[in-house]
Image (tube, rainbow, N blue to C red; front, side, top):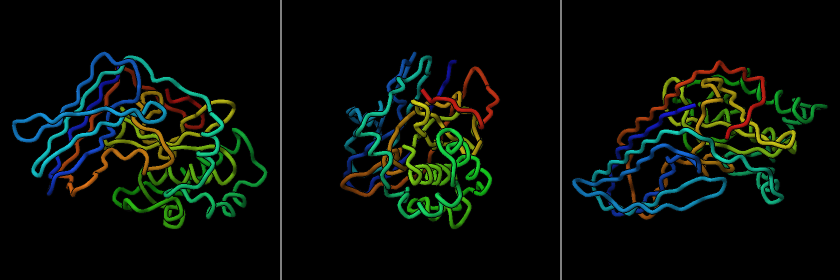
Length: 263
């Protein structure tokens, strides 16, 4: 499967700062890839740092003024799919900033009493897909799973946070992934959940808005704090515009009740 992805970000720095970009596809076999950060006529130096699960972070020092970030890639292979280490088991069972699994535990136990394994994972995804409405602009960057449970509406990150938090409440390791998503409408970066069940990580998308088979992994972590496409250190940078594209030479009709792995 050949997938072509790109992102174009326009920023404005009010003071010198360091950007941490997480927009490049995770370690994978690429036929081509290009990342460029420019200010005026000058191209900025970019340094790559490898994070966990193949996540690639790119660090850029910028001065005050407009910033243009462009990224493009054609993906012909797949990123390596890892097992679950003992440390990762602990990490992905703990509560985190946006996945308040400790607070949601009584609700989760009441809703999914008597279920375990694959049946439990499927039930959690189905419940979130049924009970939460996809409403663009209905949440903000500080909302977590508890807020989504109360409001019963959100966007992809909110659906994923709630799935992850409910699963962790029930002792199922779960994590969050940012992706490029061919077939997604409206097009943007797309967040999904992964649960470790039956000896492997399986991707869960309670929004049902894109086929999982064509997703391209960008970053993997505990919640949105670990997979943000942009982090600013030491200054103030405003987002002016963001355009994301993702296409595939194959389109698959996804049955979201089936378990598949995101490579």
